[in-house]
Image (tube, rainbow, N blue to C red; front, top):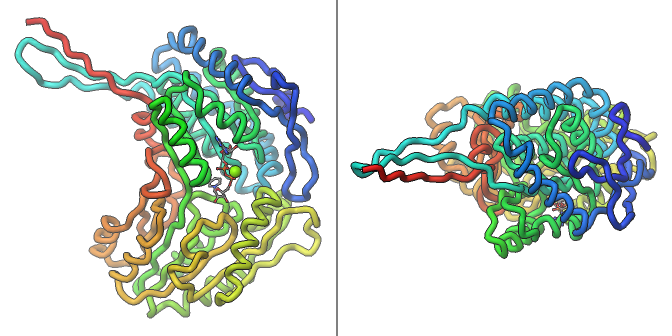
Length: 484
Ligand code: NAI
Ligand code: MG
């Protein structure tokens, strides 16, 4: 397979602006989750390829990339954003096939990737240090500097969006990046690399090594010349990455998903809430770090909300990504197995509605019908663990106090939302909810590239997106000059 019109052979890694096979010559099969067929082979990079990529990044910092002024980096990012949009059809098709994402959702991710490039292109020359009043005879100031080589280990659920928010911000601040995309979906990471090359990004500023987590990913994390790691993925691997990075005393940003609640109060505008209540659980087949998998509803509107959500679930259609229905397949048969395990363990729960898989959906596809449970005990596994599939639980509550307790009663804390017309309650809850983002009378704010994002607790730490990411992807130097 060749990725058209960019002309890329996906069995290659991207190092120092060149396409090279993995040194071992090994490849992995990339599956199409809509039908289980093999899409193409990808390079199975390992420690040796990571070594080359890190060396290329290091050379970039010492060379042409390191010499650019902030506004010059911004110009390149701007050009990358333009080329992303010029290639929107191809990127949409690649992401849709590779992830199993319905076409409209994949297209929105391309636009988001371009938006990240535009945002960071415009932001990069507005970042500056401070002068600090100090003792007589001194002038003290701070400046923001890149960490150096940044490692980016990303998952398969939103490759383009996560590249945008992490690689975009890292490049803006003048780091040189090594990207390890997920073995389940990496075609748009490769396409993005080629777009960067065509946009004039200097050699080595971005390098992409595909491969397995335990091989290429582990090697990147442990590499002594990598100065920052940004990881999005599972809690288990996140903990492993943090402990490995600790050996080199390297900072990490971890974004590990969640169990994000929406709180629906008796006074909520249910017509406004309903589309968000369901979409936030089934978008990308529920494989979204900020998916809303818990719907907490006050007793007065409980039956109404359950009935309305059930009706919507009954209308949901599931099928191949290319058919652009409400829900596509999960990313892999393995992910389907994980989700089916949760559904089996929830067999005794009150299952109120199930969406329909299209009868002609290919047998080999990773399809799981969207499933809605009601009256779920907040301590049940399905109300506590990240399922990462199209499954939501509805939980009743009586008082605001109860709602806060249930909402904060998991190990996670990524996002939360409040549906209520009571302004005082909105302010109280926005303070009390344990989450990195709180939405009032909406959910997700359309993705908002401008809005700092990240979690507390097992959802991780560090912030990406918005200006905040530019601080995370840089380090602060204080200069104290004594001049008498
Ligand atoms: P994962 O955490 O294993 O994979 C994410 C990335 O980490 C991939 O690029 C993978 O190659 C890499 N990786 C795996 N092991 C590694 C290691 N030892 N060292 C360095 N990198 C490594 O996630 P997986 O297995 O794909 O999904 C399992 C569960 O994780 C999902 O069911 C979901 O609950 C959660 N998850 C959360 C995501 C989020 O957006 N926060 C994204 C993907 C998964
Ligand atoms: Mg894994």
